[in-house]
Length: 117
Image 1: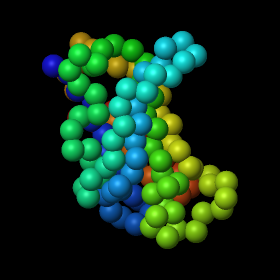
Image 2: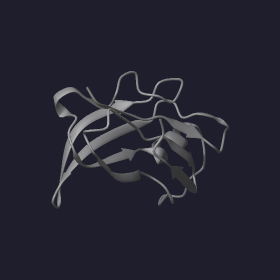
Image 3: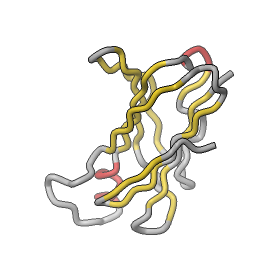
Image 4: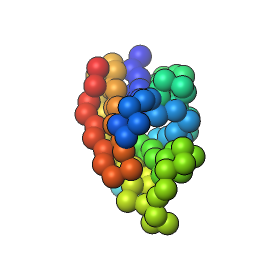
């Protein structure tokens, strides 16, 4: 069975992004259907795949990482309108592939991602 995993690395502090809320949505036309919510552990990873089993199917998905909340909790002074408050990644899944890994490297003013292994 296929699965979707993710993890977060904090480039500003050189450590895993722990306790970051992540939401996963399935994109259906102009509508978003939330299908999972997770919080990263001490290693910046979710304790289980964020998508697996019967829910794992081809389609367009959106991960939302609550980076602003994370940095505020760390004591980083962000403006009221943080440059990156919620990082949104929209991507496609071909259910014929067994594993998609979508990591996020963040700082208060930048992010990058890629399809990992």
